[in-house]
Length: 168
Image (tube, rainbow, N blue to C red; front, side):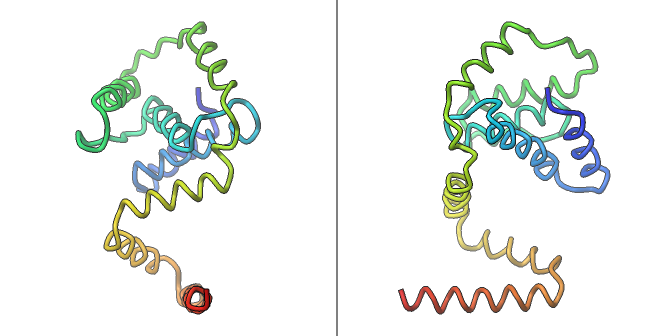
């Protein structure tokens, strides 16, 4: 079960009109903290993210299941199940035996899945899959929220990065 504080932050995001993926981000963040604290491990950053998304759906975040071409039928089916669990009012307590078994399995996994290096690698690969136009649109959206002083700093940083990459 996610911590109350995490659920509250997700609800606050929902009230502010933030997207469902932003709301789910709170649960993923919690999962990364659990791995870093040593509560359990994960095989990869993707697994840690999947656990967080599942918790978010079960906690009532209206995060749709992935599209048919984006995930396997099993993953889609599980996401649908999690969504239904989050929407139903009759919450029966989770099976203690199953919860313990899951936690014990995760405890045997490593903790490097939540390391800055592996998360950066995951973000980089995910960005490459999205394509240039998608990244450009994301940057445009980010610019709108930055304000002129931050924009200027970002531009200077980008210029330094380009200069450094030309020399290498």
